[in-house]
Length: 363
Image: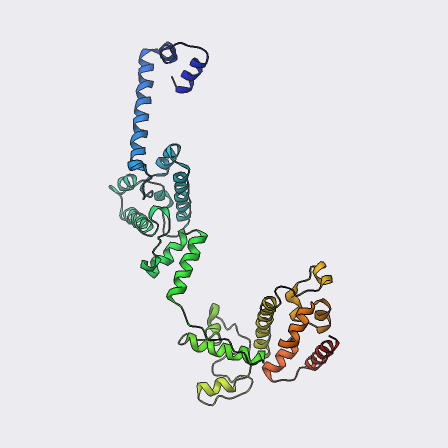
């Protein structure tokens, strides 16, 4: 009979609960039936000890769990420490992810190495290839995730293995892999231009970045190929490499052509969005987050929205620190920015300049 039954008899006051449990068992199942149950119990206990000896050799969880079947890992859980059980849970998560990957046979992922070898005996060519792929997947997983964790020395891991490991990586692992990839492909970025003219600075920064990333083409070249279609509007960079931009013919020199090209309205709008975002970040840092006045703070206004749109609205919600910041760094509406970027007069630009000047005088 089971340990729980023996404990129950002891609690009830039996002088020899084990002997009493054995007598009850023989009475209930008969001599032969009781002997069969006892042998099954001994065999099961022996099998469990053998399993734990393989799962926890020398009293420590095996470094490679991929060779155990789902059933074996489940049976071993009761004899593991919480940390070891966590490693088993992580292994099961990786198996779930593997089962959803292309080229991985879900019916092979949960088998032990012995079961995998058994599956290959007498198998057809397709099954043999699948078993070989699964064995290679396990070897690669063990190489890149020893002890169930991403390798510490990522500098020694090849680019292909780094990319392959991302499909099994945790969020922290992915960040480590990304950092290693950035280290390998690091580019010395040019210093940001600071002439006081935001449009000229952005154009200079873009040219400097293109030069730093050379020979990789700029977005005006690769953007046209995105999705296999011409995604750039007519008249913008990349819309047609043989067509002049804004009616300006090329001079034959790439450097001169770049200088002569004028930004289109569509490009200027996209640049303005980047300008607003940069201004907001810089003001947030310089003003230490004090961008809204008390009323705007209570109304939960979006501080980033103050950097575009009419000056009247922006100054009504801005803090004194932000107004002073604008006095030093300037504040451009979209119309003003487009006018400077394209060189074409904008109807609303002059009105915006006058409004901004008026608010500066009121300070």
